[in-house]
Length: 158
Image 1 (cartoon, rainbow, N blue to C red):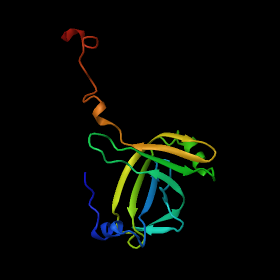
Image 2: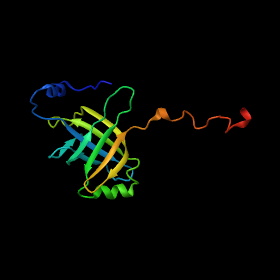
Image 3: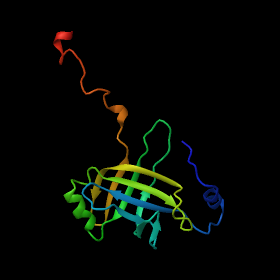
């Protein structure tokens, strides 16, 4: 699926030497959190669409865009402050959490060029970082109905 970038964004990306690089905003939300955690992968805080994103280093492999395959992403966040570990322990490993990525330019922080919201899976942690796989639930692998009539479950029909 093609992405609808603005003309200014395409022009910036096409330059050999860019004046600015795209910023990745990350918003982690969970029912147990009073408000979403908002961070930007930069050294300076930024306000986008009325929300302040705190400068915090994280690594992410943004989701791929291949046909006939569900997008997957990988997220690694520093675990230096240990605040994230406390939340993971109380929230059953972040079960039910979502991560929303947005791409903006510092000169136009309210214009979101690209965004995606994904669920967190396979959260692992060590002393230095917390890693998670992000993706979507494969709805095509689920049965269409909750009841299926088979010889072993409905003997009177067969």
